[in-house]
Length: 259
Image: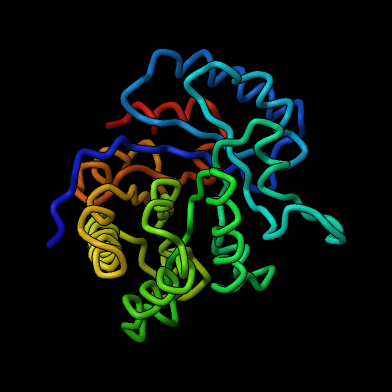
């Protein structure tokens, strides 16, 4: 069992396909006020691409960092519609989400494309939130560990040990997202802890105990104001990647302050 060093938590808001520029700016301005003064945890918000620069103008110089929801694996070229790591840094991004379950499902993101994106981002010193997690079929077949280990192994292929300082892992229990299946059950804090511990031990085997001890692993399930304290009490959970509960500033602030 890997002993965990003290890791500064990260609570990141993934706004997905929500908010116009004005709505994003208004939310960021509100968060700047109600989250001011917090220093013992990192805070990031990830608006749509269209709002990145304007949101950065609002939160620049505060304790809130800016993140993007995706990135491409080349710096420039004939890749219509894509955005590079340096372009994200140019508008103020410190973080980027890579391999989110929705990108994998709807846009056929693979472990190989995830890996190419990660390697370019760490080369450009852009912090990555790498998403991994199993779906309901894989969970029912009790293949969750195999699936997550493969995502980690392929996603972090050829990533240097010294570049792991740019990597945060987000565990998404895709199986816990209701799909109309009558056997659906929400993930518990115990479920989350078990997989976070497995991820940490896997990192130890891939790299070494030092990397496993220092890598931030955050929960990408349904973190909400009413469960954040229980989740964050688990020893291997170092924060959250928050979706729907981050869309309202007051709700997101309760999560940031809830442990």
